[in-house]
Image (tube, rainbow, N blue to C red; front, side, top):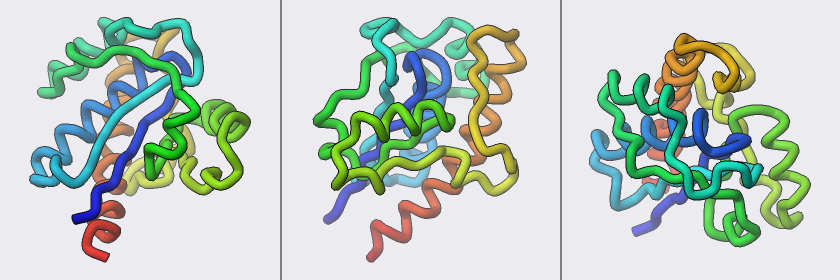
Length: 160
């Protein structure tokens, strides 16, 4: 039985990527695919290693039924490129940062999350860190949309 491992990536791994991880974990569990799809998140920067997600992100997620309390920030490591089938960046800057450190044979694993969105035509998930609570709600809206599309795409890979 094949499995697929995905890692969501943003700058500090305390807002967008853990939000995407929590949303995707929920959707994967609901689809009864937790034994087939591995979900993680990381940051391209090292500022928040070991820290829990931003309180505002946790609060917004909890209101929608997502628990982020066990998640902790970590930085992308070289071995992640071999370990994960997809490294899904929240924006172009993080995709570029991944591309700079990614071995050539794994470059095709780097994608943008919003490529999988079906309702929102934004190219990137905007960083809510310096804004108000509405930014965290927008992140969750985008993650819910794009993770649904991602799960649909992954299902086709799991059956092939």
